[in-house]
Length: 261
Length: 199
Image (tube, rainbow over all chains, first blue to last red; front, side):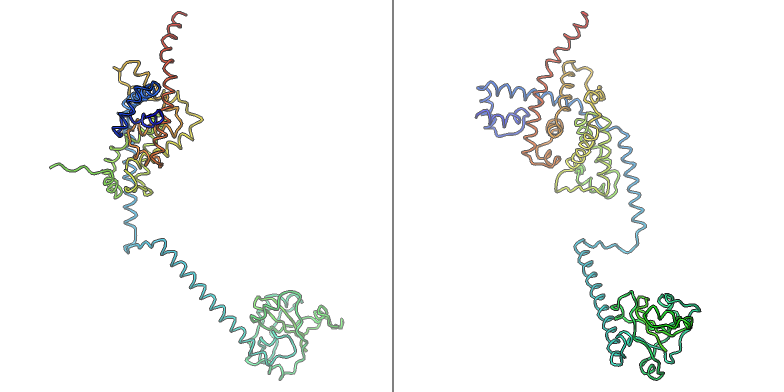
């Protein structure tokens, strides 16, 4: 045995650990021949003795009795809390679903919701297109969105506010003056021989919203409101009222207007 | 016929069912090991007391992750104690001096009839152990002072047996060097006292 191998077992020899008997005998023989290794073995044995004496000096040491008292009190308290929890629990047994199954169910529910939402969207959009398709054949020269809307059977103008400015007609409160839509408004329009301008788009809003439907509202505006759409206005009659159909989108905003005489 | 003594694992199972007697029995069996480990690692009885209490509080809690297939109850408790001790050592490092810690050691533990030389040797060893780096100290404390096997020490520290062996060897080598340097001081002390007497 050389010094390096001796080094690997000297610790176990000094600590009197169980090692291979042949290796032990060989290491001890090496220690007799090698002075440095013998000194190392002596030092290791001294340290072992000192450590054992040190350990023996603390053999009887332990935590004070108050620690045990504290812990037992804490244990009793926790047991009581657990008991109360189990008593207050519902009588039906709680089934703990494993995490993997919980994930599966969550994914299934999410997929179901997605399908329902997608189906509802398709049906809703299909209904809008169907309404559009039914009304389209009778459309007049105005924009396509005009024929998606109903007009009153008698075309009697709804009551409007006393002093409706141009902006008033464009605002949401105009919805208060809506009238029930007729089943075939275009025939009624023809029967009453009203003359109307084309629909004029408002300066805001998007016509794309009109594909989802909307509502036509008959209002009366000061004649001066026509000026803001480029129509010539006799300023002597500026305060007179003029009828107009305002097209409201589903968002409640006025998207187009036409003047009626 | 003698009743068989329940093992630590059996007691742990009963304890988790809410049996306070099982907990008390387990505590009385294992608190010495936990306390001594913390005391040897920190040198401060108050810290050892705190650590012991914390270890058993964790053990009784619902978060107790003890698995008897992975090791013994003693190794599990010492593993928790080790984590708390290292936390305390990191936290208190700037504030606790070794001399203070030694001053707090129970002096009555050293028998009154023991020789002064033996007492000094034990004190020197205590100082030397406390001055070791923590990872060498815990190997020395577990294997030499607590007399755990390499396997048990590896369970406590969560490392390989070879790591325990090498740390223990290195720690003991450092202890030898420290004890060698401490011996002249022990012999020099009486000379110093006599010098003072002459002065």
